[in-house]
Length: 479
Image 1: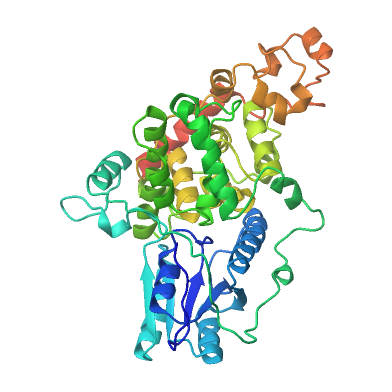
Image 2: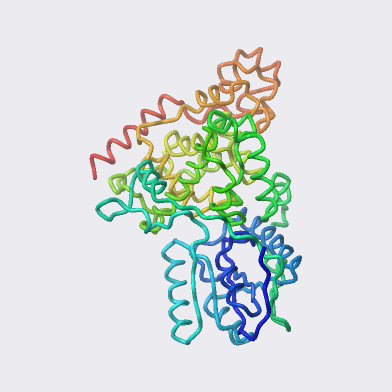
């Protein structure tokens, strides 16, 4: 474990972004090794591009609160500022006399351009400015095809990435943090108004999560102590608690992929499958790096002529979990209540919106951006395009998930549906994924009245499938 030693060295600013942790933080370590006092900074950037989603904001508040306490426990202090990143940093340099600024790299083009401009400006003024690989195992330019182009398909990407992968040991968190003394101004976190109040839906979400580095490590520890053994075969079962639920912690940088990689042993089917999921995250960032409009433009332009429906009523019914398909509705209600959804169900609800309702995948991506605690630009956009069939390594566009068939396969007793769609809880498992097939007497005994206590299906599965396949066919022929 390392500690900071004071010297005559000028202060170093360590700029925290989506790396809100003290363990395995290369930029923090650079500041420590340089010597001198630290200015530990988080900026709520007014020039950050896409506005933070509502659920992300809730997590951000609690995450910053946890980081601040972790820093204070080591004798330091987290400085919060809001504004244009370059100006905030300049102001702090003026206030503290800092001679260096360190940060871990980001990968979206707008972020990269902003960071590069800051680095160039600081360097020209004789101020040290360095960035580090802290949030990925492999950076986008490190894995390319033999012809020097980025991979467009996951399997060869991950095979190549693993062949050249050298994952070192994570950096220990410091025992002590010596920060700049004196009155360095900081915003009050509560003044950022990240928490909803009317109504306070955020508190309910937090009943299911513990933001912060300690929460991330505890989540990983629990997963490795039990669920990972059954992960390979059980990860598709939303009725069972067999996933890591680390995704919000990953997205907010409260735990690093290097830390997780070292903790997980790649010698069992569950471990290998879990590490492959980390690979999908890495691949998504490669896609975003080379395709900065991944959240707004089809990766494959042959689908640009797709005739999407723009139906606010249908979109709203899907978003609120009132489609009449219990497995879909359970997923959407889980998302609304907890800010998280099981991965298998994510694929099904996304497929339903795109292929049953013929609604643009971008509308779904935008809803997830606002309601997912872990909303991550790379993973969210890449995953929605995967389901739509418009992306890299896309699922075949003609694959249309059967929403009740998926439920019967992966929630065979209906426990997942019963939890999140309680108005169907008394239905026998034979009918719980297709309540419209139940005899009237069975419905009555279960207290279900279709169209009143629970909606009838919005669309017929067979008809919806035929409609979307025809729409895809027309779009491809028009390309």
